Amino acid sequence: MEFDKKQAWQQISQRIEHKTAQRRKRARSLFAAAAIVCLSVGYIAYHSFFIQPPEQLIEVTTSSKETRTIRLSDGSTLVLNTNSSLRYAEPLDKDLRKVELLHGEATFDIAKDAKRPFRVAVEQAEIEVLGTLFNVNAYSSKLAVTLAEGSIRFKKGTFQCMLVPGERLSFDPASQKASREQLDALAVLDWRNGKWVFQQMPLDEVLAQLAAQYNLSFVNTRPEKQYPLITIYQDKAGMSLRQLLALLQRMGKSTIQFDQKSILLK
Image (cartoon, rainbow, N blue to C red; front, side):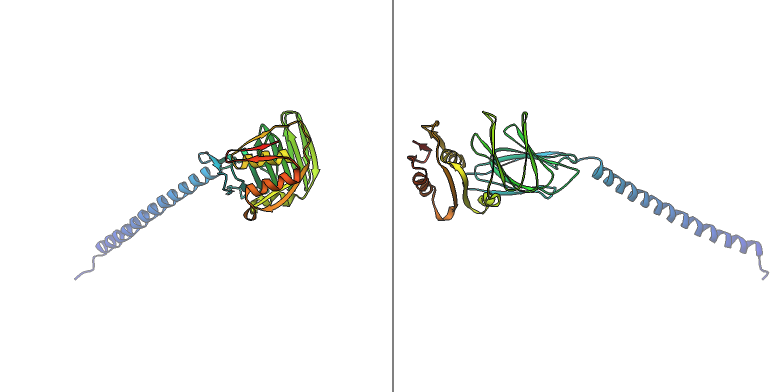
């Protein structure tokens, strides 16, 4: 049988064309898959870096027998004292981190971020910080801000000042009067460890804060009186509120009446 060169060449050409078509099909499939992956990665990156997730407003409130630890998305840790409340938005803003202390007391351990300052709003005042450890007490009509580490700026209307570690600022919004004093700032934060901590605080202010913590009314029948300064560092587990008030009565040389609804100072 005579060898047909023309037919043989046609068969080889057909096989080459078939394999080439298969390679092109696989290449198109790989290219399409790669394009989908690139688009997916690009979409995720765009949303991660340029589009903020929906903001959620969070409000945390504690009861008169509860403290609570809150960890923010930036790594900051807040500890909320009894009968207190605060509000913040998550995720935190990419330019400015902000929390509002609505009532009570909280300690703020703020993660350092030079590009995003941290601000605490309280009673129409503002505390500005980059990264530090401080305490804010807004139980009564006076604000008390105690700085343990770092540096903060307190601003209320035209009044503003910088605090240094170991310093407490007491500010009266009604009179716009402020006072500053040195104290054991870390001890002030020990309420987080189940202690009553009062350092060089007038008796009437101590009672006002206790009433706020236990959701009681407070009546001072002699608001014009200058009460003695009180310093107490006491485990709550070892002393009831009634026992504490009895101790304060002796220390303050005043009459204190207490029932399930109120504290009365005479």
